[in-house]
Image (cartoon, rainbow, N blue to C red; front, top):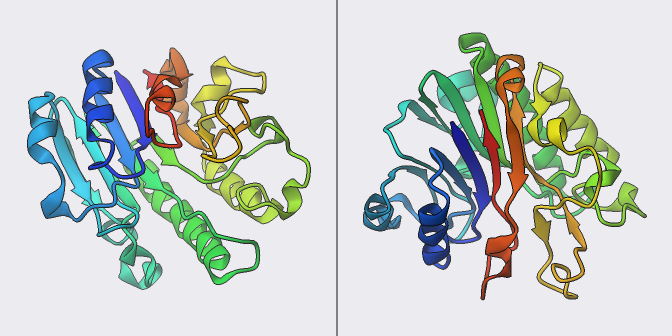
Length: 261
């Protein structure tokens, strides 16, 4: 099974990029983030023509997640609430950032983790609170199914080798100690980074700022991840970042990351 994750930064703007990529890379599942479209306007027909079924959870202009799969998913749930209950979630499901379903016995979770804006801001506090609920959410799903794959745009570079230049990381959003500690707490339930099973060195990135020729200079960050339960981690055979879509005209600022199980 091949599963990919890709923050497309607007599915309608990048639709041709997505369908072209699927034609060239017929993965079993493609998890999309930042789709930026309400559900009724998602380009379902184009995705169907590409050979995929789409499950979506979106909102106008912001956020939004979707899972495209060759075969229909089972037990699809959007948001935290169906898993952990509304009392534990509060306002966190107002933003469409969580979608999950099961394919061939594998529970796939697609996440778009909040960016956090700036350290100490209300959005930063929201991000830390969101990650706290994420831990409870994933603990519950892992108790239900030991085959758990969690992927998406995490907006956290977990280690210094995930940043082209980690100088000043303590005061930089996506790399502050509090964010890293919050994500480590999530992973402590038993999840491992699929990419690091196969690539120990630095210099591998999945996101490059549009500014300052960052992609051409490879001044990027690795913030798009696949985290696997022990059972799936033992079965993972490869994990790669495909930079080719980032080379296209008007690309997303992220590149797809593909894991093979």
